[in-house]
Amino acid sequence: MRSINVDKIEDKATQDALLAIRSILYEDLPILRGDWKYFSYEIASAGTISIEHDLGYAPSDFLVTFDSANTTINYELVTDEVISVTTGSGGFLRGFYGKYADEAIV
Image (tube, rainbow, N blue to C red; front, side):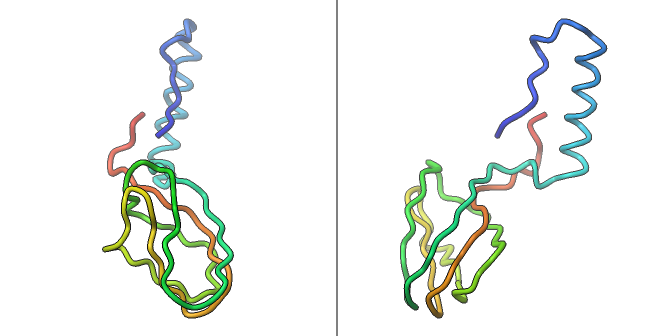
């Protein structure tokens, strides 16, 4: 997860302002606490497929923004390398995968 690093800023007022902005962002927009990667896939037909990802861990959270393929994520088959989905038809699947962090690293 990325964070606003203020350690190298020498001006105390600027450092305090950035720390306040960082705190507000993570408190008011908890979605920013996650480690997310955008995805967009065109799915040819109905069936179960494995989609490779390069997160280095098994994503536990999925934010689907568009699904015209009637997709089900097979959570029990998600691994450090692939995401398994079953689709009811061909179509498109878009969104974000990764993991949500309960505590923001601020």
